[in-house]
Every structure is written in structure tokens, then in C-alpha cells.
Image 1 (tube, rainbow, N blue to C red):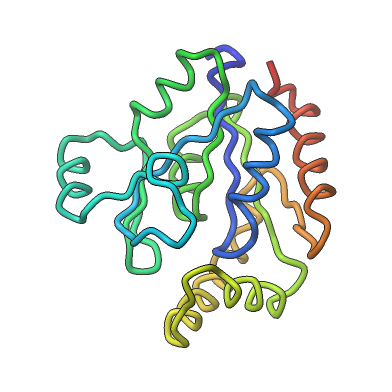
Image 2: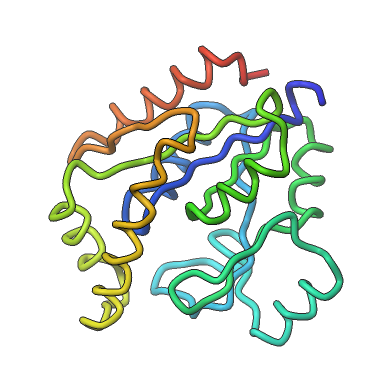
Length: 194
């Protein structure tokens, strides 16, 4: 695989800022492009279908699984998420490097499928569990107490797996630019930019 084919994985527990950090990366380097994930969850206010996610029914998702269209997929917080081979191929064919914004389970699947020299895995962490809880609570669309508890329980489990990643970056509250710059420096250090 040439440099343009290397995968950059941004992962972490729900609410750690994966998507925001990835979008910041795309602004500073046009040679990177986010892989748009398929999901069965409902669209949140402000999300754009085909840009933030491909929103599909559970039946459609299951059909895609049956047709082996996914590079990786997982059930997370009672919904399905998956990244399609076709999405990654389109990005590679355009001469850009794919950026996967995925949960920890998906990141570990990628780790098993792709050799280390062909991928870069970055795990985002919050400064504290309390900060993470506040971030999740502030999410658009609201969240039930039960769903919040589920996400916090899952986050505890996921943060214990941070050591499985190549790099760990703490996403400090109010320091988004600093976090993005740290990720950019990691990518440069690993020679992942074209």
C-alpha cells in the first residue's frame, strides 16, 4: 500500500470528541478525507445524511452485512455502525488518505485486519470521567438517564483498552486546537501525510 492508502483511525469512547477532532484534521490537511459511516441510529438535530453518517434501516444494514459490504461493523449503544469497503475505495481512488472515526470495538477490528505499517491508530481520552459525562449530557437531541449510564459503563470498559492503540491523546476541555495539533504532529511523525 502506498502512503495514500494508509488508514488513520481516530477512536475513543462516546463523547471524547472523535468527530470534532477528525473534522479539524480535515480542515488543516485536504489530503485527508473522513470515511462516512453507516448507522441505524436516528439522525440528531443538525446532522446531515451522507455527510455526518449514512442513516439506514436495520434491515438495510443487515442486508449490507449479508452482502459483505462492510470493512468493519459493530453494535454500539443498541445501534449498528459500519464502514463500507466502497467508501474507503472512493477515498483512496481520489488520492486522499481515509480517516476512520470509529468506536473502540471497530478500532480493534481494524487493528486485526490491517498491518501496523498501513494504519495509524489514535485513541482520544477525556481529562476525566466527569468531563466525559458532561460532554455526553450536552449532546444534541438529549439522552435518557438509562442511555447515559450505558454510555458511561461502556466508556469505562473502552478507556481500559487505550493501550491497544499506537497513541493516546487527551482531548482537554476548551483546547480543541491543541488536541488537533497534537494529532497532526503524530501523523507527521509517523510520515502518514502525503
